[in-house]
Each structure stands twice: as C-alpha cells, then as structure tokens.
Amino acid sequence: MIDIHTHILPGIDDGAKNIDESLKLIELLYEQKVAGAVCTPHYYPYLMDINEFVNRRKEALNLIFESKIQLYSASETYLHEYLFHNSNLDFLTVENTDYLLLELPYIKKWDKNIFETIERLTIHFCIIPIIAHIERYPAAGKRDIKRLKEIGCIMQLNVSSLLDKRIKRRALSLIRTGLIDVLGSDCHDIKTRPPRIKTALDVIGSKIGNQYCDRLIRNSSMIVKGIDIR
Image (cartoon, rainbow, N blue to C red; front, side):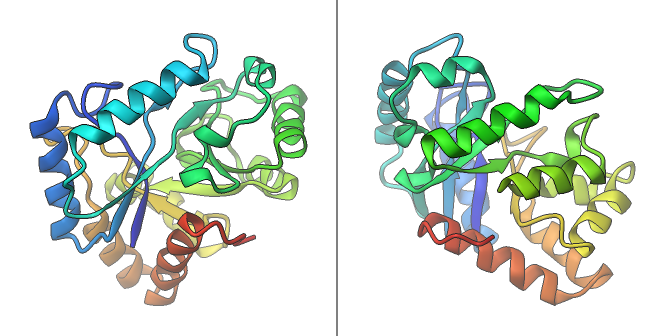
C-alpha cells in the first residue's frame, strides 16, 4: 500500500511541525505496513511560485532522508488560474508522473468554470488530476463526481472518513459504486490527524469486501509508477 496523500514533511505547511513529528508519522505508517508515502505539502499558486515551493520541499525531504519507507515528492495543489502562468507542472506532480493531486474550492456549488478549468489543466499540461479527499467537498454530489471522472480525473478518499460515523456510510457507498480510485491518510500530526490506513482497510474489507481493498491498494502502487489506472 502506498499512502497517496500525506503532510509528513517537517515545517513546510500545516502538517508535521518538526523532524521528530515527521519521523513519528513515518513510524506509524511503517507499523501499518505502508510501503511508501507520497509527500503532498499544500501548494497555493497565488502565494508562492513553483521554484520556491520546490526548494522548500527539497529541504524538508532532505531532513528525513533516512526514512523507513519510500518517500515520493509531490504536492497538494490548489486549483487556481495562476497555474497557467507556468510552462509546466512537472515538479508538482507525483514523482514527475502525469498525476497531480488537486485540491478544489470548498464551496456549496461548483459552477461550470470549475470543471472547465480542470479540463483545461488536463489538456494544457497533459496531467491526470487526482481530486483530493473528494468526499469532503460540500459541492461533490455523485453527479459532480461522475462529471469529474468523465473529464479524466481520478478520486481520492481520506481513510479518516471511513472511521467517522457521520460520513462512513457515504464513503463506503462511493467505494462500492466504483467512484473512488485510491485512498490517502491525509495525515497531519500524531494527535488529531494521524494515519489510520490499516483500520480503514479493515472496515472496507468487513463491510463491502476485500476485493475493494485489493483494487485501491493496487491503484496506489500503479500511480507512483506513472501507470494510467483509468
């Protein structure tokens, strides 16, 4: 299993505050038999240019280079028109593959501009958007998720949603109906947002079947290799 969405790099965003916390998060992932973690610090195009972000990410990665698990460089990039000011987005993608973890606006309803901007990104930069924690957006009904998939996006679900009584049923339904392609812990810290991948996989296996676990695990490995899972 590869954790597709993490904030374990020290001191770069609202995730791990220091090296010690980073190493503790990595240890938790290792104990859950997670083979690798995609490091996806937040990137806001309107606050920082790509070169500055990449340099900061490199410095943070170097601080924990002796990790027990494989670390992959990436980003959680916020959807914004400023992205089109760049010649390419290669350094934001998952280990220089075509996959880009994309965060969308937290608004009640997405207008057509949201979908058109994502589609332009896919065409202009030849990327495959991974929509981060799709279940968390107020605007993301099943019709909207299907529309995103038609554009060419794949859907990531946070494992914490499978352990939250308020949205557990919906999360399982999204997985069962094939609308979720990959999981991520979206871990930020030890106390309030730790990685709980093993527990979530146990929930999926017991409630809807281990074949769903197998598919999600397989997809995560294919993504870091740059294989198109669509």
